Amino acid sequence: MDQKLKLKEKIAYGFGDFASSMFWKIFSVYLLFYYTDVFGIPAAVVGTMFLITRIWDTALDPLVGIIADRTETRWGKFRPFILWVAVPFGIMGVLTFSSPDLGATGKLIYAYITYTLMMMVYSAINVPYASLMGVMTLNIKDRTTLSTFRFIFAFAGSILVLATAEPLVDFLSRAIDGADIKRGWQLTMIIYAFIAVGFFYFTFAWTRERVSPPKKQKNSLKSDLKNLANNKPWFILLGAGILTLIFNSLRDGSTIFYFKYYFKSQEAFRMPFFNLIINYSTLYLVLGQCANIVGVILAKPVSDKIGKKSTFFYSMIIASVLSCIFYIFNESDVMLIFLFQFLISVCAGSIFPLLWSMYADIADYSEWKTGRRATGLIFSSSSMSQKLGWTLGGALTGWILALYGFKANIAQTVEAQTGIRLMLSFIPAMAALASAVFIFFYKLNDSLMIDITNELAQKKVLEENEY
Image (cartoon, rainbow, N blue to C red; front, side, top):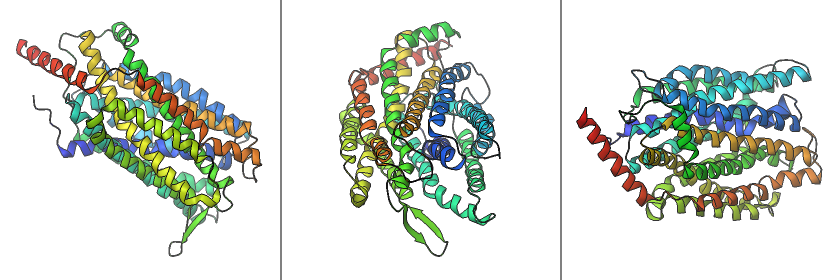
């Protein structure tokens, strides 16, 4: 069976993460700031809310994977979820960034409900989307290429929102009643929601599922969970993935606070014709996403030479060292701040295509070792690590801000500024170093995976001949 993927299908798969990453990035960068500085919820309370809501959502991911593995439609197992959930995904994004006029308790209840539902919808579409890569092809080189396309589009979606969010909010806020920032955020999210829903549709329409479980395999949740519990590479990659996301979440979540409260002037320059203000934070975040794309592009040629494991390991070590150095910079070191943001983000960007490609390898390894394939369950763990890392990173950001005495919309103390600087340097550096330690013990190297893939392909041929 020819499983070579055409360019159109690779692009279509990338569209899905373009849509998903638009929301993921705006949540990871702006949501804490939105809740504290726009909606008016204390930072420590938001940190706790992130922990509670996301832990439930993280536990939901494996359930979605189990359901998807057992779904049978004319479109396959995973593609239907992309079609069914796209519109609810867009609607909940808008509601999450809406600010009804409520009291302190009402605001908190609204935030808990809308954010919980948003994350549930995110799981319902993102777990099947991630799993789709595992059934589009068995070719491990194609998977790395597919993963590369995915993350190029993912970072492109992130760049779109990071480049336009603050200017759009500012413009739309001033266009309505003078300075209604709450309405500005809501209208901005409506624009992003329409874009995301459209891209998800093209992912559904232009991709195909080709890899199916062994024909003799019967559904057995107990067997699938038992096999997963005995899968050591899965546990190692899960730990590395969680720590990598903590690293990124801390750096993303503290950026807006860093430039608003550590820099004396947020404004980098102004666009006179459009009367738009471009802040340092926008430039910094967009540069980071561009550097992430460079990392994604470098991931394949580098991993082809030294292997996925080594590429992952050295990227995290370098990111950890550079993050520690970042602490010494101050407002006068703008060029160094932006240079180190670029270098750290190249390292971080190279991780993500490797991480998801390695989860696809683990699905093959599990089938090779046990005779059973549970693609959705294994890929839900990748989404689970993403959510759990995001959960812990987001909660830590809120708690650290509170620990160092942060108060929204006032001049910060030296202690509070120190806490914000630590969240861009030493604290994420520790997470990156711990991730490297985990991946050091990962055993599924590229040569072993080629042997496993060949054996599975031979089994597929024998099965098809039997039937």
